[in-house]
Length: 556
Image (cartoon, rainbow, N blue to C red; front, side, top):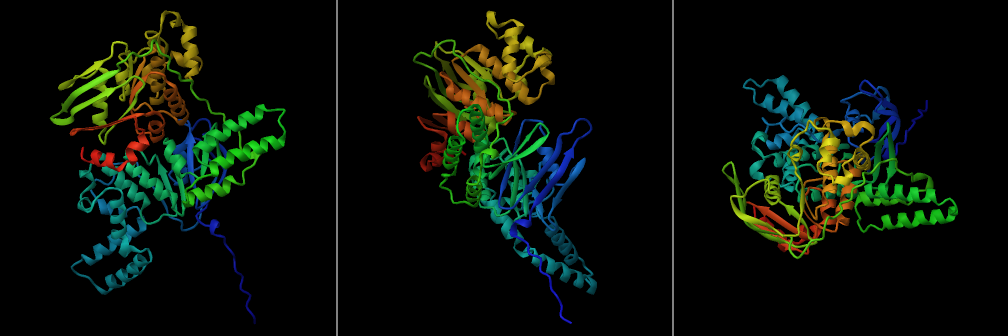
């Protein structure tokens, strides 16, 4: 009797796929998402964007099985290994760095631990031998014998040298912990990689390395980030979480933002012929597709962009705050002179002999591997902290307004309502409720929001009202310590545009690559060993110039 063998043909893209079907979710009240349908495929990196509180991190928890959908299903291919970036930085304090990384592959680590325990037994018997043999076969299948080498190489690329790899995690600095936990997520070539704010706490060199790594990562990546430069570098697709929906778009963050603006323009061109609209779309796509990068991600993105139609681009429903910094007067010949500033905190030297001149029109980026150093210098420049030595001298025509990194430092009394707090900074003709409510409306505070007490506001809301205060003060020098912290992408974009357009001078710190790259024309790196000061230099020129970076390394 002849046997009939049926072969089932699977395409490569059928594996490592995540299918979300008719998914809804709520904690208790209104649904966070309603009837979400998505198919996430390997070879793509999906950047998840959405306002603060829209449910980005909740969606990641649903994908990872930490939460269950209220309705519908989330299906992941059998046997697919999902890895994610650990958010608890203390979870592995009792493990060595190397073991922490290997735990990124749970099954491999389980086998390794059991084998080590059996070999350590003083009464090793035949049954143990059989068990070890079985485990060893599976261990080899998972490439376990190379695990320590692979983990070590990954750590080295992230700046964690051989001398630190047998150190306990609890002994590491916060920044180094972040790097190890990132290595843990990347270890063992996971089928699905989930990253929630992976650039937080990383230096620019490590972020650049991660961008390059993900650009050629062959499997499925899902990432939540407020870092526009990072999203642009790695994303092939955007998932927009908004108003209970999760909508997929082809392209990176800039493509999503600018295509939604194009869609709005085309919608307003009622008399334009379809052919003309198609031509505008084609020109727009061509500009974005002209990417010299040969990375896997860039190639995948280009293929998808080439297939896009008018129906694929849609106007965004997102609201952007209106941010504009007017001037009370123009700057004269002098802005600021910082001379020989030093500061020690709790017995540790934080700044040593920092000197620079800020010129009218300068937009100065203060950088450091230590956030304490940048914040301390900003406090000294703003006059809220005295240096141990040195001086800060302001030009006679300058007026300054300051947003502190510690949000509580921006408010003397948080029991006030937003309206009453803001009134103290307004000129006489702007002190009335109507004018102030109008301004707050532009900063996305609706209706009775203006009557909220400051102490109940979110971090993003607090930043927005401090920015409103700075707009009212009309200072010609803005001092901003990490102002994009706590803001959603729309607010970051609006602030970015306002800083670019500002006619005065600015001194700022930030971890946002795009923000620094598009605003700064004077860059200073500071440390406990001095400073590297470069005028008429962009942020990208500063970080990519080898001779400058050699001088920066000498600061640490």
